[in-house]
Length: 109
Image (cartoon, rainbow, N blue to C red; front, side, top):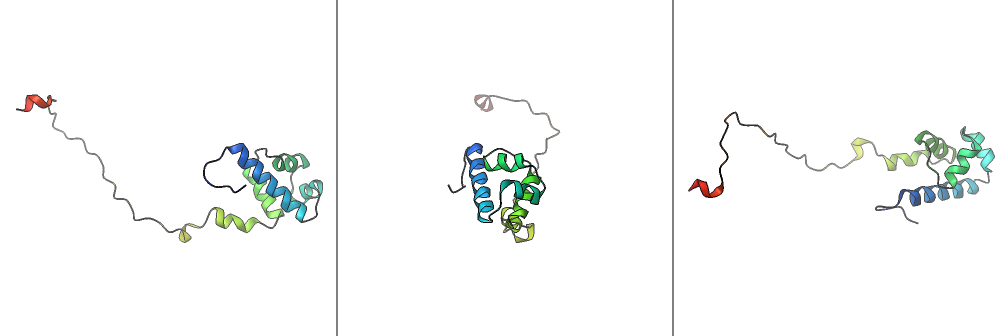
């Protein structure tokens, strides 16, 4: 599944967990070995691979353990590398000190 657009959060978590599992298996490492390598519990690895939510710090540890940590540069690029739009001129609303009496449109004539 390609992750783009608006998806149900559970589906995204399941897809990320599946990808993490595939990378781990590609390294020929068990969940237990991987958990020890990245410094999280076996349960955390299992939960993430099964689509459960986890803290960002655990995801960073896992990305580092999978040698994917530099992919965060694509996920969240440095500000200098972002092409920004033209700045929007912002105007402030200034209340008038004059109190004007409100009139119906037909009362103007």
